[in-house]
Every structure is written in C-alpha cells, then in structure tokens.
Length: 137
Image (cartoon, rainbow, N blue to C red):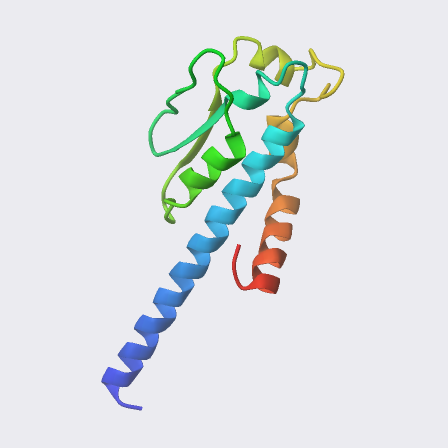
C-alpha cells in the first residue's frame, strides 16, 4: 500500500468516524432533552412548552405570551447544527420549574432533569442501538 493511499484511507476513516460521532451526539441530545420534556408535569402545559435549547450560548426564551411552543421541534432544529465539541444547552424559564424539579408535582415527584440525567446511560445505549439499526438517527 502506498503512503498516499494509506493517508487517503486514514483521512476517509477519520471523516466517517467524525460523522458517526456527530450523528450520535445529535441524536443523544435530542433523546435526552425529549425525555426531560415528556416527563415535565402537565397541568396547563405551560412548563412543558417552555423548554428551549441552544448551542454554546445561554438559552434565549423566545415565546410570546399565549404562544404555543413545540419544544421537541425546537430541539430538533438546534441539534441539527450540533457538532462534536459543541455545548448543548437546555433551559426552562418558568418561575416554578425548580419546585417542579424538586418534588412539587405528584406527576414527577423526583423531578425530570435529574431523572433524565440518571438515565443518560440507558438513553445513550438506546440511541446507539437505533442509529446502528437504522444507519442514522
């Protein structure tokens, strides 16, 4: 094998590995955040609809009063631009989100974020299995 062919082969391998890593990172962030969103208690839906995401910068909460959000779709838009090394940020600016997280609701007495983080390994395994089975996220 010539040195230039070996170099091209290695370059292709590195490129594919990076693509697979980014595909996993995007899918994992989506899955983890969706776990948080779907386990956020619902009364009026206000708290669940106020999960917002960003990359590398503080979350901008851009929801007008009375406007309905689609946090899963907003998360998908964010993760579509994620690259390995980026910081994925999720936040909720509802005044009572911390009481919800720390047991105020009988729907989620142990919170949402802490439970999702505790399940991160399981979520990552499920994400990886899905990617391997489908060839994508």
